[in-house]
Image 1 (cartoon, rainbow, N blue to C red):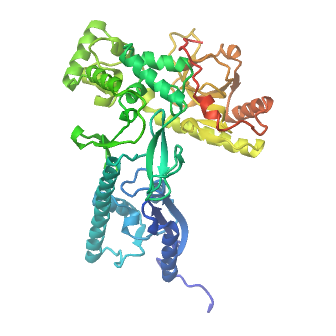
Image 2: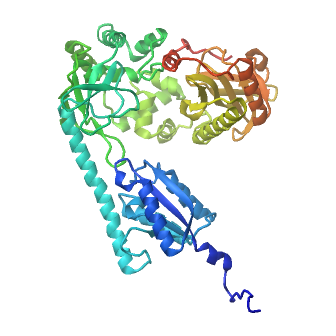
Length: 553
């Protein structure tokens, strides 16, 4: 019995072993290079070794701001694991209070720590001079540290904004992407060009600056044509947009034009050689706000004007005449009048009725069209519950795309890239397959065949993997694989009798869909390595093939 293990009554061996296990949370924002992930890991490892702890799990947020929990998947996963009871550790090791977060409301930082404490997991700040033991001094120190972290972010935001305003007043470009027909040129302190910045690229040194330059001559001609059609020919936004898309002219993102892009072009002062900064601002992750005209920062862009200043001034006058501010009460009153006259409301009626704001204006003021309807006591006969599940089905599309990507990498040796907002797969700039969700429409009677409707967006190439929902539109009933050679249109209409006409393949489950996709790719030689020029592919994708919305197919 001398070598026997003696366990005292009431001792929980599993918990005693678990107390030696810890998780670490590390975070680094873009502007805090001295708080690198490696430095935090090293400090946490030294602390764990001194206390006899074993780090069994790591939660990481790299390049993430600490102002809020949104956009920090590492911290979100950590809180979810702790609350679900799946955490196999009793301590969370963090470098210091600021790495936990620079929340502008210090109570929010304390709330997330309290959630961990309530579920039996203690948060430990390794580099702080105080011990997080729940004492009075510890509480006071944490409160001060949280306030200091929040205040540091506020002061930094003011300094950065002031610096941006000064740089913009000198005529330099402040910000990321530019509009159509413009380029960003990086220059040094002596104004010597150092190279053109493409989309997603940033200047290398803080001493470098960014100047605006004209794009191609073709783009400049398109800009002048837009101003001429609007000012001299008095065409509407829709007419200008339709002419651009019919001519297969892509916008600066390589995609078809929309109505909302036209007034942005018409109001851009860069086209007359000027820069305007601070029209809008967003401080410390808050909502975007419009600043008054006296707060705008004007500068000379040192760029040759693309548009004649006289035509630009006439365009601004026409834009001002088109924009009429109507109070929200007046907007709702006019909507009630139209409802009494027409007996119903929908987007088409609102957009085509004189005196009513555009649908987008109602959405902007009231949050959604359904909210505006409820304020005037109108219940739309349309099934709007589908809108509430948009985020769920978007995540399902992304999950299906990622699952198919893994299969294509393993079985066919392809290197697919997730595109189109996470619902499509590309290889070498060529669209392979896109996932769509088709909701089932209400049938008029038992003798009518079921029909499905899927929003096609601007997808005009590649296979279409359609997920058809059941009668409740809550679960996936089956799948349909359609070829890319469908008639162009915003929507895809499906029924049990239209598959043969569309040359579609019915797939009862995901495994059958994957088999059909791989067979189709192999048959069309997509499985071979692509030799397409990636530089030309964005322009090809941007050409609009949809010249008119077709009806039911």
